Length: 111
Length: 116
Image (cartoon, rainbow over all chains, first blue to last red; front, side):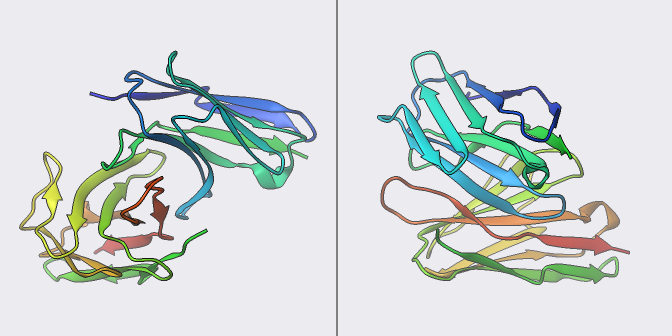
């Protein structure tokens, strides 16, 4: 059974810092991996999707990497801003099946 | 990205009544939709997977007679919470996925249900 782990569970950083969120998964037979952002009381916003054949994806200040063989992904946020404060969720999909989520990293960026 | 809407965004109902939540994919056809439940400060829990025109597949521990799911068209799925109890109060989120790679899942904004 696929399990997704995210560390740290919570992170607080001063504004302007670069930071890395980690995600690991137990079964490397994934089709894709998605990173989401969730603000309190809101739904999920898709940030980046990495297909299994890809090693990284970039969107603005965000960069996500994927090492399928080791079962790891990282989300790099450059020059963090208070508006980046949210919970970040990592999820993997074996293919035409539901996403399996980690428990998330709660990020606070302090002005 | 693709847009998924949910309605209502929040609802308050009395114990014993039923409430229906709608989930729509606005700019793509979703052969598969998912319903999740989220408790405060916890991650999403998958409740069921629905495929257009067929019965939903429920996760273990989810009562199918209590949480009725209908996926009658390629753009609409509904979740009906029947005979609601206070313990059904939660945040319900739907997700839709097109039937072609990379099978990206798009999420709705969620519905906050409070049962009094």
